[in-house]
Length: 521
Image 1 (cartoon, rainbow, N blue to C red):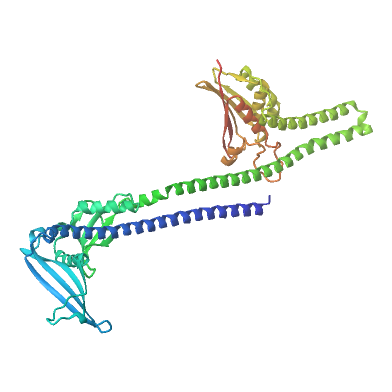
Image 2: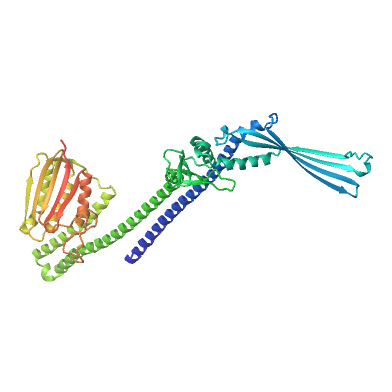
């Protein structure tokens, strides 16, 4: 995958993810706003019903107090009668029709004690109505001018609707000057609010207060705050005006609204996190695959270079042997054959190294372990490299301070581990290699340290030095042999021995490889 295509793909995926998160955030915010609107609508509807119920309760209360004075068996303090008489002539049928409407008003004195007003008493009127329609036949008039109606219809009514409206209007006029705390109690307000809010599905704690314009009254709960309260007018007069307002505050309103959409929010967050994890994983895999592709390309180039030199050497040696002057010289033939054999071993060792790593990854490499002294393995490994070190005027010093060094290990593979580390110390030393090998006991473990004073490496390289195929980038110059498999093999073998390997290094000052292995008794 090209670099530009890779960047474009990452950018598009990132924009898609950001878009999804934005849409989810917008959807959640929009849902919260809708919940708040519905909550406000429900509260205001409940408050309007509470206002109506309070006024109706007060009206019922006062009507019930005066009702005993309006009963039929109660004698009125005064009576007045008003009558309306209408006569019409039916010339066609020769009849006279008389309409009579009589209103009886009974007045009762009610003690003001019931209503806590300044006057000693006040009058309450009870009206009843009689409507009579009489029809007279003009042909039946006698000489004495007596009239006998042909038809008479009588209707009685106590006019309850009229009485109720009259009572309500009257009460509103004279009750508006009574203090609010004498008209309703906080317990009554709370009961009405709880009932109406429950009907609207608002099951949430609240605080309330009745204000007279901007002044708080005694009718309120203890912890009321007006800042975010909902209000409605109460105790309106006959002109639908009034100074009292009922306010309700919900301290846990935000929590209530959030809890109403919490399941949806949690699901949205979970799914968004899954998408983010999947996106991150995909990006990580893309980057990893791209790096692996680049590393494998470098590996193939290095392998090609590593094989090219021995192949060229072998070809030159074969060409030299074919020379008639050389073929007769047995010493030179043996020399060239030795060179061919050495180069062949070198290529074989590189192939074996690749195969070992492959088998380790597939768990196909059988490693048998036995009790062995780590110090013996160290001495044996040093013999493999001491000629090279001496040839470069360097040294390998041992400081084997561990009292106990018995470990469970495979002699061949663990010797290769130490040889690989020593070989790296030699290869990455521009001057004469100076190597020190230390051992010590810490707890139930033996620690092996191999230090050199070579080129060292940066912290970034040290973090990745045990990765397969990884080599520090040095341009297109093959100044150091190898293909990034040695230390990967070392780590796999150490891990298989239940050990741990790490490296401490500083650029230009050398490196120290530290291996920790468990002791056996």
